[in-house]
Image 1 (cartoon, one colour):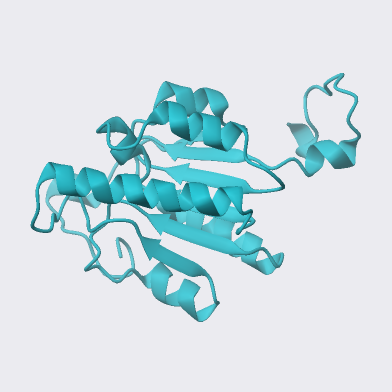
Image 2 (cartoon, one colour):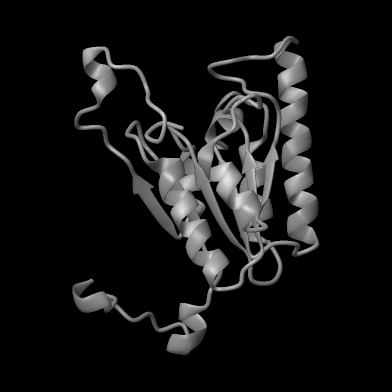
Amino acid sequence: MPEGQPLVVPDDGLTTRQRRNRPLVMVHTGDGKGKSTAAFGLALRGWNQGWDIGVFQFVKSAKWRLGEQTAFEKLGIEWHKMGSGWSWSRKAGSEEDHAADAAEGWAEIKRRIAAEQHDLYLLDEFTYPINWGWVDVDDVVETLANRPGHQHVVITGRRADPKLVELADLVTEMTKVKHPMDVGQKGQKGIEW
């Protein structure tokens, strides 16, 4: 895309403006750091454009208070923890309990999409409940492919399902080249949280 120009112009009958304003599904995946951070940056750009933003976090512990959450709430951006942390710091309860929490979180997002409640939905760490079978990928793909109005969606997490990748308009894979944890350094304030 030299100088921000697309390499091809599709023969789809749409004007440049119509094509530019299509709502997008975006996926940030891969084993590298920065998937959520990139999505939070996108949300800030959307907020600056006057969009209604909804952040729905699926895996990070409900006990953690991320810096982004504090800042977003001060900006009036909705932030929801859709469960209580299923990967690193699990709350008491069975896998069935966690699966039910994830399914209810997805059901709430579906309700909001049907109601066209937000301009941007940030589904943070959403690939995990899909990969674990707690949320049906076919339901996600169908819901996102048929969402009404002008609603953007960004999904983060490792190992994005190929069906999500196929549906998405934009897919970025973060690749780790080097990380301080490789040599035993623990995460730090302001960098990891």
